[in-house]
Image (tube, rainbow, N blue to C red; front, side, top):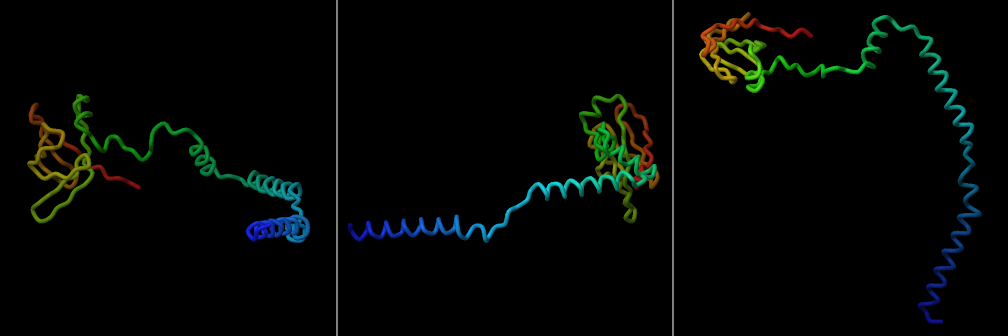
Length: 161
C-alpha cells in the first residue's frame, strides 16, 4: 500500500470508530428518553383547566358585546371614511357634491380652511373644479358654484374621539 492509501484507511477506521462510540456508548448517557405521552397529557390538562376557568368567569354585557362585534364579519373598513375625500370622478358621478370642512386656521388676516382634506384660502378654486371658496369662518365655510351661481354652506365637522 502506498502512503496515501494508508492515510485514507486510517481516517476511515478512525471515522468508523468514532461513529460506533457515539452511537452505542456515548448516546445513552447524553440523552434521556423523552416521554411525549406524559408531557402531552400534562399540556392537555393545562389547556382544559384554563378553558374551564375562562368559561367560569362572568362576562359583563359590554365585554360580551365587544367579543360578539369582534367575531362578526365587517361590512366595511372602519378606518376608511369615503365622505372625507371627494375625488373629481366621484363628483362627476354625483348630482350633489358633498364637501367636508374639517380644519380651520387663522394667521393674522389670512384664513385657511381644510375642505375634503386639502387647504384653501378665500377666493381659491377647489380641486374639483367649478367651485370657489367665497368665505371662511370658524364654524362654517361658504362655497360658490361657478356654473349654477349658487352658494353652498358647509358646517365645520369636528371629529370626536
